[in-house]
Length: 225
Image 1 (cartoon, rainbow, N blue to C red):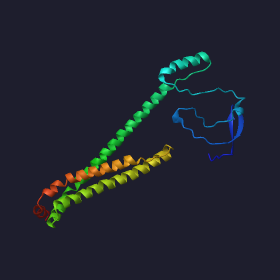
Image 2: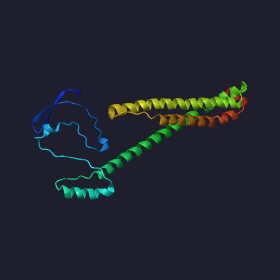
Image 3: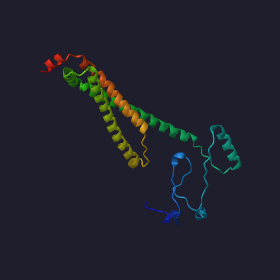
Image 4: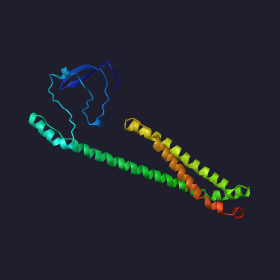
C-alpha cells in the first residue's frame, strides 16, 4: 500500500470514520494459531463502539475438559470454541500434501536416474570403437576404464548442477511470486542429489564399459570398415 510510519490512515467502523497515525508495523504470522489482527488501534479510540473480547488458551488434551468446565462455571457468558479438531484436520491435510510432494520428488529423481542410465547405454557402441582404438594405440584397460568412468561422473555431475540451478530458480520464483513467502535453499539435499546422480551415472558407465573392454580390437576395427 506504500504506507510508512507517520502516515495517517482512516478506517470506517460501524459508519464512523476514525483517523489514526501509523506508529509501527507488525509481522502477522497466522501459522502459530495465535490471535493476529492486521490493524491494532488504541483501545480508547474504540471505547464507544460495541465490541467483545477474545483470547486464546493453550492446554493439553488431558486438562482441556476440566478447563472448559471451570471457565463455564466462573464466566457463564463466555463462549468457548474448541479448535483442536480443526487444527488436527488441517495438519492431516498438510501432511498429505507433504507426502504427495515427497512421492513426486522421488518419482522425479528416479526418472532422472533412468535417463542417466539410458544416456550411458546409448553411448555403448561409441565406447566399443573408442576402446578398440585406444587398445591399438597401447592404452591399458585400467586407463581406458578410468577415462570412461571420469566421463560418466562428469556427465552425472553436470546434469545435477543443471537440475539444481533450474530447480532452485523455479522454487524461488514460486515461493516469491506465487506463495509470497521467503525462499530458503537447502544445500545438503542438493549436494546429496548431485552426488547420487554422479554415482548412478558412474556405475552405469562402468557397467556398459565392460563389454567394449572385453572385445578384441581387430574384430571391432574390421567390422567398422
